[in-house]
Length: 432
Image (cartoon, rainbow, N blue to C red; front, side, top):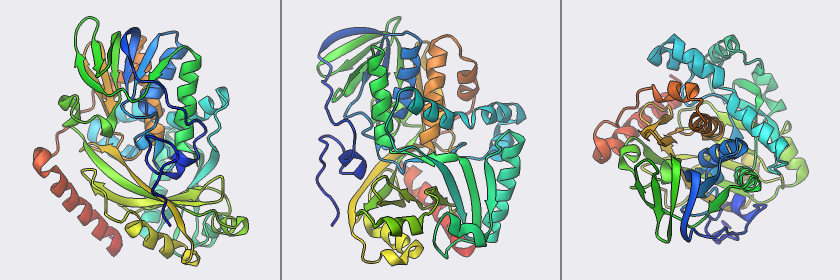
């Protein structure tokens, strides 16, 4: 039976919400407050930026429309995957060698930020090291070998190729032809991570208001951010709403598309069985265009994700796509119950590269991590904080990257993207 009722009010009915360390609801903003910085959105990007600025001594207010980690930050697969949604070779071809080198120098930092903050603030988020990229075909293996060689030119020494005979060290299935491990990857309970980071912000004097949807941003020397019940007057505003920004600032939102992904969690499995399925306790994702991703949880569930809904739409049956794929990987789970199933939206850009910039000299934004957000949001949140503090060199690199509108605008962006995804999915099925 799939769980339909949340034990954590205001959150989706996920295993993460049910097992969150901190379920208390912060108050909504009431009245007028002032701060050096007002951050819109308490997901990974906003909380990372707020923590960076709080550590630097700034007064920070965070406004969250729902609950901390309500969106993709608290619903994702919980995998620490290094790099970006496009590989370094593609980035070099698009933007030139100089920019590619600068982005490559930052490409492992998101994971480093997570690990350092978990240690510094004693965040209990089930951090486990190690990830496995699974290949179905020899072509995908060759592509992984090329990526490995390119990564190593930029200092990533934690990658190892895995032969078909060695796959069983990481996952017990006959589906894969081999793959690659990343010792600098890993997995976490993402909602507990963002809640721990939010608590760190509060420990440094930051104020976080939940159920405080922003209704307007008024630009000026001291911009004003309004909610239904109050306002924040600040020196700087950071817009970090990503796929859940809605219609607030269309000059940002029109350059991204919300995309849903579905996740489910089984009932707790026998300890011997989960150990057999994933003996190294690495997280796994495959190399297909529309990929599956899965891992063990701290209470011995199998958490399995996949599927995609362009425009943020969900299938009527959340497990209808994922469960058949899970059974292709682990047919021995045929009679296993699914106790939780949920979905969440991430922000996709046309380039699949995050979009950073300014709406005014004192209004910054970052969004569009394009399905690669756990690490990238932590990096870009930190970079937003650096820019506000007067160190904008890295922000300038990101903000200089061109961001393009979707062909066909809002009317046709979904069908055209679906057509492209169908083509790449067909290539995966045919092994091309």
